[in-house]
Length: 229
Length: 395
Picture 1 (cartoon, rainbow over the protein chains, first blue to last red):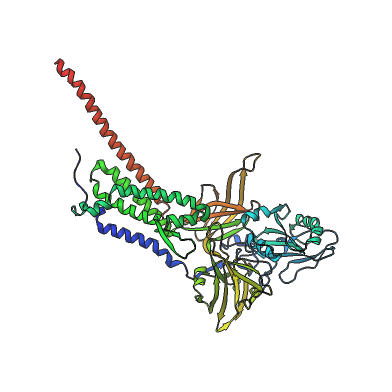
Picture 2: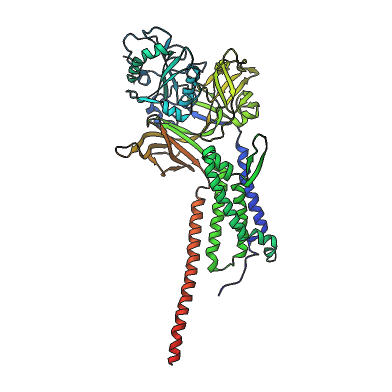
């Protein structure tokens, strides 16, 4: 036999409870809007240069040069007014110069400038920045902008990327040539090592850049970490 | 009260027809939301169709939008009201306990979605092999102002892009620095300033040589806005010039005030954690002889000095690391399989769908069990009745 008792008077059916639930939902939906634009603050331990020192002492990112913020603070080569500290010793990138090439050392934002025995306008630079340096896509699009090309998206970025093997790790290589009567060409290698991003870039008129391309590729393949030769 | 539940209004609110209509609307919304993902991306489509109260249609060639459908939030809210109202129709009896549980489970399910919609925070953590990271990054941007003067630690201040968009002067709490926002562009393309370009607002840093062109904000959540702002740091009554900051620029620019060095840069909004993850190894397994991915996994070291915790965790597909109220899912990878990207989901209501499924299952089992028992009893009674007939005749 079924009981015929109804629960119309019981708490769950009360119209006031329905109203309360509706109000609660409205509050749930509206509340998050209040926490969107407050200035946040965090005290972040700086990282020791040696990972061993950082292991027990802090919760941050080891391997960063002292005085720099944690990786991820965007960085683009040449954009800052103050050059970041340069990695030294085991953290520094090294390479084997192709025959006839010379190195002029660090200046301003550059870790090194390379001179090559090719006639015409061409410049080879090595720049290092802490962290992901703003990301691959942003940097590639900035480079493209420098030779008058429109930006590309992630899919086109993946299609444009060629990967070379080196002792310092995989090097992402991008090769872009501009339009116009005098074509500019840029070949750039991008490599991430121990919290830094390195940019090895050859840019100039399409002719001389093309001439130097095989040697530049060999230079990228020779990249390694460690002391100077 | 009993009278109230029998009023036409209550009957309408608790009507099964309303339930069916709302469930049909939900199905329509799910289909539309799925199709819209082509143009809007997953999160964009969910925001427009499921987490809104009304779905708007933009009238072409006008500034007007009109609501054309109730959104998922409104349908969910009405469904909860409808389910709660239906309690008044279910007798308070053991053999109806299953129905009570099923309704309760459904209410919990919809409530869970409201809590997720309101409080779920999606972030990312990108770690390279060997790198240690103690922050997660959101999709929104912030202007990071970092005091790097202390040799032991950095003071990091983040001004959300939403605050920059409001303009005016932003006081940086606890510091003498304030930032005057001269211009904020939600989405911009940057290029080297040519002779035809107007003079830049920036008087300091790289921005003086950069032209900023405004672009329409992206509508697809697979794309990101490249925001830019012209800000003027003012400290101790002194202006440090107008600087261009943008997520498309990179290197943080710096100024020095009374011996303290400050870095300025636009980046994804960052939330620092009291613990860190180190990526020890990222694995990208493929089926032998093919490029078809078989498995992605990240072996990470979880280090939390405040709890004395230091352990290795393997994060792989559908097997997230759940820690500190957050779930770290294996989401993506890059840089020749040396970079792992973890999707970090913080959702205080993440257990509710599971609980509601269990409650609904128990309710259904209970209800079907009761129905089966009643049906078996009835059948038994029917079988007994014909058997008794002839016997009685024989007697």
